[in-house]
Length: 158
Image (cartoon, rainbow, N blue to C red; front, side, top):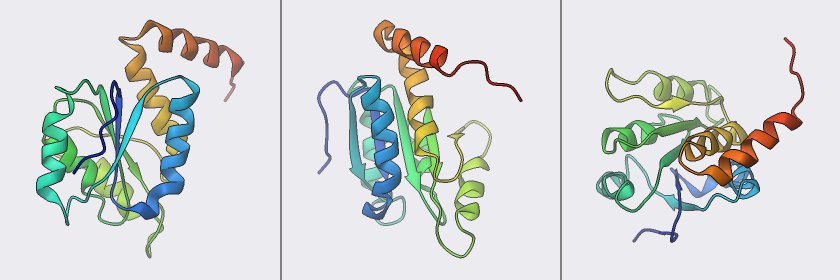
């Protein structure tokens, strides 16, 4: 039923296969830091029980963070967060009549006690970088790579 990857640290859950272009941005960043990940296509609306089961089992399987990728109503990240104590990163996707603004608002406006960290609309890179920061808290190799990456950015003014 689920696509599990042995020793994965990041679980990516997309609401639809049509989100693949955004998912590719996440995985490129994770791969650059040597972070193992897994991808599952689950829907908060069409497969709510499977979505809840995935989230409930994630920590016991060794995941450290989940990225929920969704557009339109974008309930997926919130549903994942409701069923795990792991950090959940919400990635709103562009599309629909509001071009992702509705998804952004759905993800960022969570009730107290069920937080979802949120990145910009379609910003798979930042979702990947935020996940890398979380993994780096307990992985010295990822931390060292992240420190080197940040040094390479130079001084950012503004």
